Image 1: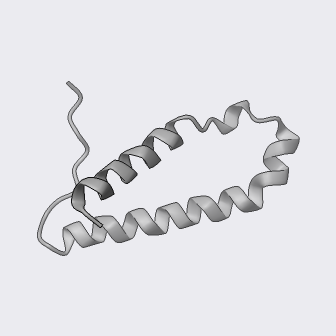
Image 2 (image 1 turned 180 degrees about the vertical axis):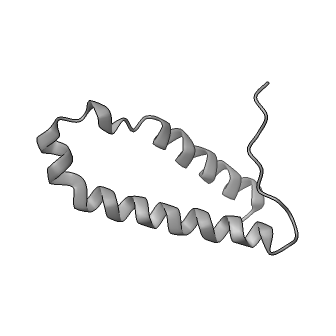
Length: 68
């Protein structure tokens, strides 16, 4: 996959995640979805850690952007 396509997919994922607000979910819904939500969060964490480690393994740093 081309670099531009990968970056577009990452940006789309970030955009989709910005819209997730579990504080607005009813308590029963959150409890009902907790197993799937936990699995999704663990999978995201694993993927993000793998990507960040790939950057770090090349001697680069993953830095938080400075707000404009």
